[in-house]
Image 1 (cartoon, rainbow, N blue to C red):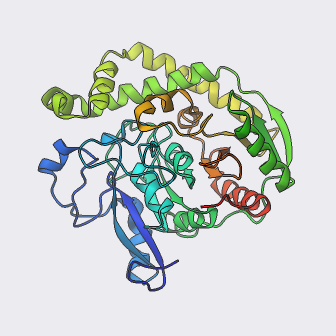
Image 2: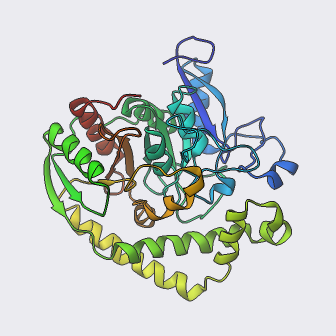
Length: 370
């Protein structure tokens, strides 16, 4: 690792949803950028990073672009430009943490911070062939981070390797250390996916020599809908004023998503939280049988910019925002171009085991070519 000046330390990039003292926080929005003032203080999650900067262990190299308001999965931003997927300028970078994913994928940063409310770290990690960790809900403080959905927002690190993500966790949570040993039992979850993706995931797990058991997750579609309903309702609560005053100045997809969310009723949200309780109970029973779950992050290769909406149909991420579970997306060898992405999911507070297991899989199966 090196700083931007070539010295020792890590180059760290910060998603422009996170307050960084002395810089404005725009949330990827031209409306917000027009009146944004420099943040007076860092977001609380940057305390460890700032200390590392003062000790010469890392350098903050800049802030990264995102899908406007973090309310979208494609990463397309008409106001500040869409971050370029290093696997092809015609491919979606994934969102909302698009700039963070492309920064580490292109080598512009060693570690980048993203937010994940409905998959916004894991989806761009999958699209850009990098590693991204969605942390357990409330493990990393979100004070000083612009809200999308207060009940679901999380902050986590991204990097080109599992080791980089581990170092990112140490900056976000000083004292963090991976578990001394990887998981011994993994539950393999199968959803519809391109055959080459399933084959790549199975091969990586087999080469790691971790015991694998087939696991079924019930009511996946209902849980996904519940997660997105809560996300939409809380996003509307947060941004209704912005939409009413500036709907025509927001990205068309974001404006439409906010308008649709305005019709979600309190009764619908309450029913979704009831579904969430049942979902958490189901996962609790499963984690008594296995240590972690393994499944695809996305079901096929990232779509082109022209077919970007396809990304909403091929993701397997948001139910773990509803449960608050930690989840890590990592590339594995396979495919002809963008490497398939393996998603590992653990029980609440299981980041140490997730990182240790991902490192063991990466070491045994080998990293895909960059």
